[in-house]
Image (cartoon, rainbow, N blue to C red; front, side):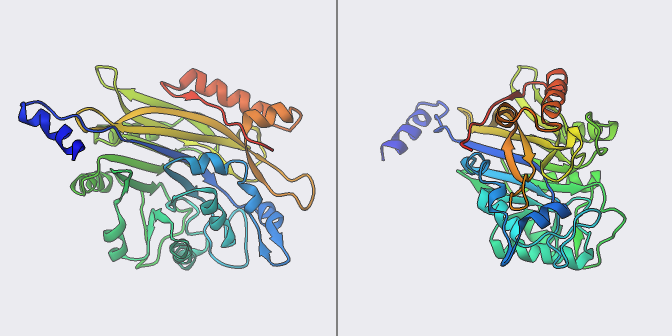
Length: 360
């Protein structure tokens, strides 16, 4: 009762009531890949075990109120295969869920690697896990029901959108739907998100040129369009390397939108310097004194995929800074950190690095 009186008292005096502060932390990870060596490493006599892959990063993921990952390998069923046409064991998304991820992005260029049947099987597997997922849909009815996807996180209604530039030449067989990047459709979806009373809109894009450390003109143009349309968070994937991040502010200097052009690889067996790791981006949003949801902060940390030393070792996602201090001799690790920080130092705007400490 005291809280109600506190809220109503300013109204009786003709003043704006003070709304209790609410903060929500969001975490975004890049491409969760499954190459053949990863599948072989996870193989056991009883199936596949990925539990060791994320144990060092899981506390950071689980600490977020809501964590998002790009599922780049469909669970299309056996035989399980890596590049160029992926099909991961069912245990892979289950391990990502156990690590703390809440939302799986499925609109990417590999979602149809096992054709539409494999894409549908992936959706069914994610449904069986009880996780949220967006980007591909079993039918028009499913699209209408779940896109835009709006969820309530600690009292803040957040809409998530997911689109891909293409699907490697494969086309979905009806009734399956893949969200392709289409500006008119995206504008429509943003308007629909507002109609659904979303207070924050997040657009996750699969875009850009592979292995390029800077965004191309199309990415920049589309990012500008999204921000102009009122999207507060633009999160990119696909290049398999990091690209810059921009915290854009209004004329008063208040954060208006965050653009992350590419998070790079979250886990993979890619081996060149810039592909051995990626970034996690942590965003805090909050209610201001007049009840608007605003961006409060954005920061990143770098992660690295540690490869097996012996046949029984797993691929392990580790904090990159901690790994280079413990194992400075690891191939490409030091170079990955140096180049990523060079790019971020030169091109990032308003997004700083933070560090994770774990026990190994």
